[in-house]
Structures are given as C-alpha cells and as structure tokens.
Image 1 (cartoon, rainbow, N blue to C red):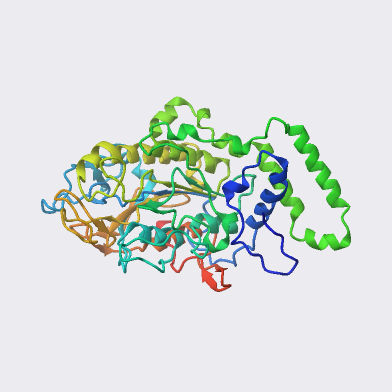
Image 2: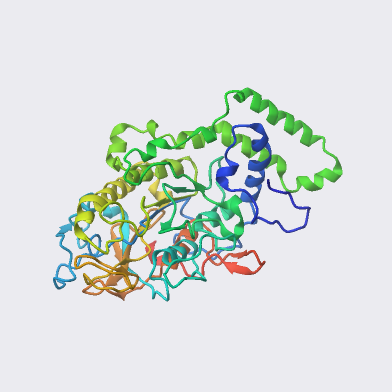
Length: 488
C-alpha cells in the first residue's frame, strides 16, 4: 500500500504498487485507498515552461506503434530497385498516392494512405553495444543508453533504478483531463529471449506510474487474443451498485468538510479530489467501454485486420478517443522470435514471412488507423509514430551484429532505417531525410531515435529538457535530444 508522506517531505515512489494491482478495484477497500493515491501521484509537478516551436502542444494523445524486432526498411518503405542483387528486395516497387514516393508491393493499402504521413528515411545511430534488441529498445523507449550489456548481448531484467519509459513520464507530466488511464501498453511486453519488459516500466518514478499493461492471454498467432481482454477490472462488483458507491463518495465529502485544522495540512496532498477521480474512473465507464471491441462494427474490425496487431491498433484508437494520453502498441512477438511465425527478426527466410505474414498485418492495421483517425477528426490531435529499434542490413547473408544469418537473411542495421510519423500537425505526404543508393547510411538529415522521443514530448506540449529526479535525487532530462521540427 502507498504511504502518504508528511507535508514538505519528498515522495518515495519506488515501492508503490503496479497500475494493474491498483486497478483491481471491484471492492471499495482498494478503491478507497490505493487508486486515489495513484491518481494523486499522476498530478505531480508540471514541467518547466517550454520554448515551444513548430508543432508544440499540437497533440492531445500519442499512438506509438513499436515494431519490435527490426523490420527491413529496404523491403517495406525505402526500396532500392537499382541496387545489386545481393541488396535489393525481391519485392517490386509500387507507386503511392503521393507522386515521387514509392513503397514495395507488400504495402498496397499504406500506398493509398501515405498522403497522411511523413516517412523519415534517415533514422540512424552508431550502435556502441546497442546491436542487440533489448539495448536498442531501451534507448528508443526511455531516451537513454542502458548501463549494462552482458557478453551475450542481453541486459539485466528491469530494475527500480531504470530510466522511465516514455508513457510513464507522460502519465506523470501530462495526466488526462478526463477520468481515463493515462498510459497503456499492449498487447504483449517488450521482450528479447528471457529479458522481459526492459525499458517498459516506470523505473525510478515508481510502479504507480507504470503503464497499464494490457497483455491478454494467448499465443501471438492466436487470432482471438484480443477477444480475451478483461474489462471487469473497470466494473463494479455485483454487491456494489452504482448508487451505493455514489453514497460512499458523498459520505467521504461530508467527512472531509469536517476535518480539523491539523488534518487540513494533509489535505494539501489533495486526497479529496483524488478519491473523487477514483470514483469517476469506475462510475464513468470510459475505460470499460473503450476496451470493449465488440462495440465496433464488424466491417471496421475487418479493415484493421482480424489479427492481434490489427485489433490492437483499433483498440489504440478507441483509447485515445476516450482520453488516454499515450498508447504503445508493441508488435505481438518476442523481438528475436521465429521470423517464419511472428517476428521481424529475419536473420533467415527474410522474404516469404514479410510477404505472407508480417507486412499484410502491418499494411492493413497502419493504413486503416491513419484513415480512421483522419475520418473521425482525431488525426489533427493524435501523433502516430511507427518504427522499430533498428532496420535490417542492406546486404543479404552477412553478419553485422555477431548473429548467424542465412543466405536469404538480413541482420540488425541501426545505421539507417525508416520511421513513419503522422498527425498532430505533421506534414502530409512528404519524405524527410534520404538514404544512400544501398539504404546503408543517410545522405540527408540523419535523425537519432531519441529525437523521435523528443518529438513525442514536444508534440504533447512537454519540453524534452524538463528535469526529473531519479532514485538518487539526481537531475535528469526527459531526453537529451532536440525534437524534429521539420516534421511540422
């Protein structure tokens, strides 16, 4: 249980409960103690005044599509048809709705929706030990390079001293204005081998700021995984009807109005308003309704794709529509999983899985998400980002990271890859940056992954240089990078 600090003393967050533990709120006991205190934490000190600039504060919400595993930029959205045989894709180029922008044939739906987005074809960083998935993921999601990488390339598991994931920082600095979950991560954790959710927690901010982890049971290939979402966490138990809960809220208000002067000093921590917000989260039904995909017409669900990633993107739209600030949709596979089944990590058999499995799912979900948000008027206030932790090696069958690669496989490649950014004032139908003739390095405007994170904060109206204090009370910037203002 959270302990309330005495007035004037610093808060300790590292021993606080997880958001999932907090939201087991069927009974009034947990509802009355833990959730209000979590909501209190959500309104911690606001960031310092920001400098502003193009696109500053244009986004109300962010949908972050994290394609963990590292999709091949050359085979998807930066084709090199004139490159040598051992570099160019087996897929043909296709024209898009935007003259001068071509994709490969595995993305026909996105080709008709790319007029709503900007493609950054110059994502780039020098590895410095970040050739493995987990370390690269940690950098992208937290904005900082991890401290420890073992000889095998794997990191230690998540610890309370980790840098916070972006969703946690946003939950703290920019809580929703309606009774809704501030940050949600779905449909599975970040993972490479047995290292699970490194970079996906609130770290030194404390578990109270963890994203709400929505990880339904079922295999990644399970087409009905998202049908197993539990919404009972946001519902009253049968013995606690709505009227009874409202009466308890009224009683709490009466008690608060009669507290002594000494107790008024504790009221400085806003217990009353956070109790109220706790009741609102349950009584409003916003979260419960947002998670209920059955409220969507079948034809809409079909367009997103009846697969885990497609339904997760649809759920992301429903969550931001209901008021969630930050939704992170992780590609539903272990980062270094089997490419023939689920993973982007195509060290072997690069082309058949992309053509028959992964790209059709990405194509239907991403294109429909952009169209759906735009048609609903939500794209103007929702920043959409889609990228992996790195791309794939231009040359087939070579080892660039120490991994073994088949003759038709591509290894990890952080030196140059592609990201898609859309919404919240981002320019439509444009390219930013340019890769060389082989897609191996940028020749125009190299952009570091941490700059994408800085752009996310910037679009939400949060100065990326805002100072937060870690577990040792040391000042740290949200991210040591500048936002990409040319996007806007």
